[in-house]
Length: 86
Image (cartoon, rainbow, N blue to C red):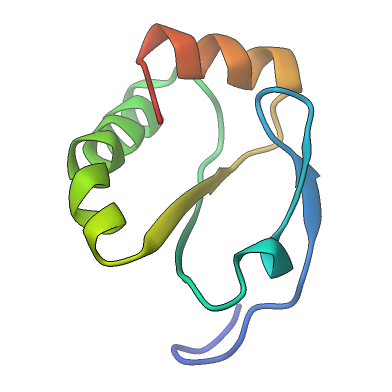
């Protein structure tokens, strides 16, 4: 686990559309990086929807939100569409 203030190592994962996204793509921006266990579970859905509600505030501060779980690209896509996640 990283300590607060420690720079996260770069990584590349696929988004809900199968596009590669690297943490380094966000250089110069604030990044809210959150890890969650599984798409479409009650706790994870509440968390994702809370980020959705706050998304305009994050954008005003030039911040992006990246959620990471071990689910498949197809599962992420269904989750994103079902809850209209940005």
